[in-house]
Figure 1: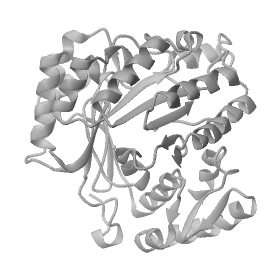
Figure 2: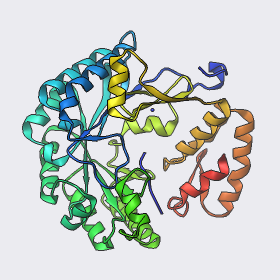
Figure 3: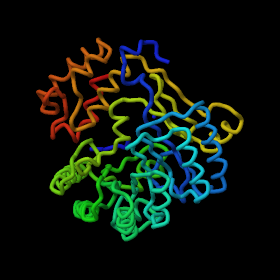
Figure 4: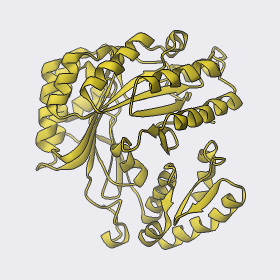
Length: 393
């Protein structure tokens, strides 16, 4: 069981109300890190703080290309390590974000943060700039596990970061990884216990993945790492579901748990198949039925922006059928599932029919079920959900 993480069509707007509507969410990518974690394949650049000013200028140019301010309901600043930015360029970045993509009243503005960056002054700065949700990339409280993951913080630093952040933010989330080489069920239970005991409002749990481009991938191929057996990883996932439920967390997406009312609104955009803006190196966007990705090399991104060129390295216009199928598959990551009548009325008819023909098979196998007009995963379907979606293409 592997649980991964997770920015002009020809059809008329009336056929695809969701994917072709105006984006009401924005993702901004900050690529800087002290070092690259061995399991990371994201767009990051380590030990190049000399590029920060050029980066901020480039992002400002990309925002300016919007032409006029574009209000959004959610903003997510991810990385990399956004909180690694020095104060002056950080404030300038936030000011330009507020200028070009202002947040609507009661909107959600999230930022990812590393535990060792968190202190009172930073929290005050972030709050004063308008950020109201903080996501800590903690991964674990266990010293041996953190060392294996190549993390540069301690369990005590993560605990302290949570305690400080909770003084200034109502919404504090923490990421936890399970299935790390050498980890057992007791270590995983201890991580879950530590996180819940400190009062966080949201927990994301991810099974360790070995992706091409990450150091762990090559080490696994060479036999330098031994992956946790899949049955052990499955037990860890099921343990998380049961433990967090007992601690009054709602399991609302395959890998995400929240106290009631504290679900991440930005990530809902992806799972609902709605459009979003993507700004910065490696940032993905989904606008007008077109998926695009900025150049993943930070240096190449900077060079393109400084030359007045488009930062986009890849783009794909998704036809109505593809948008329909993706909307179903991403929507099924949510525990409530997909509301069938609205999905069917907005989707491409042939694709909707083909999807509907697959559903009875998975219901009979016990992996899906109908509930109040929604098709959703069962408890048995959750751990193997990724393998189901091949049938819906």
